[in-house]
Length: 373
Image 1 (cartoon, rainbow, N blue to C red):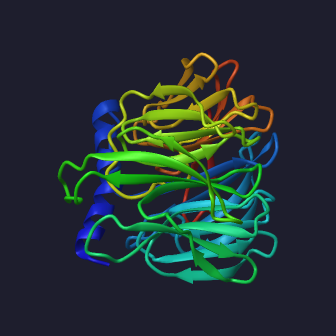
Image 2 (image 1 turned 60 degrees about the vertical axis):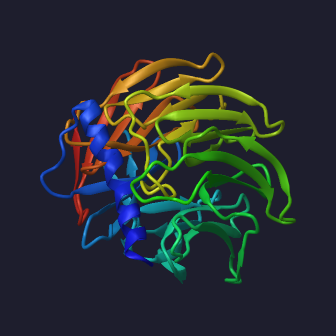
């Protein structure tokens, strides 16, 4: 991979955080710390957390389960993961894929046996997602070319280990599998002229819904003129949200392709080039699909009402040394969990807006330090 590509990817990761700090008066840590790259509720009281600490360009870490009521760690699921920058979990919760920005390695783990069942080595795997049945892993792969960006999607079959490219996926910047069938959503960036590193690069964004069994496109959605960094389906697969550079979030009907709502998160920097580099998506649908949580603004978590396109509630981040990275709803839709930098995990009660608990994780993670709200 060329030096220019590495510089662009590094800029894509660093510049958003620098701008966020300027907008939200978030103070940077004196040295790299722990990043919580993934949070997900297993049930009303248990939270799965993936986290690691920067080390020589990697983010080695661990995956564990915590009791959100007591703040106690119940168990470790994965004791030693080489790079935890990006994470995906199969819908049945039995497998996890982990990968990083500079390690060029993706591992698929059996969460019952606590060991890797597959290891892929290639150019960086920046985003990946499991299909609904858990037997296909879609991967955004950065290909070594002089022209930047050149990014495409590969489909990796489990357990056979066969890999095949997804036709028509060049320029993919984000992806998500539908929970309602073999439909893969991919976001594409079509640049109007040759890409110039650090320059003005006008583009047109699209989202395509593809049937991975036939390779046929079900429909194409217009995504505006900003890079799409994340795609997220609602739990029933009926809605699809695209998070664009600059904080614009579009929500479509996955069935009809109609644009349902557009909301704008303020105080968010434009993201620079390439696919998502910040781990799990910073947006999440509520279980009923009528609300959307956004952790795009480092200073607060936003809760949007998608029926009215209005900002329903904000949850302030009062940890000046931490940035919000990703979020998840509990199954009953009453609680929000957020992972961030400096090892911080926040758990908010949605109805009251009360911070129920904040934890600080450490690596090596032998200890968990609960904090009173």
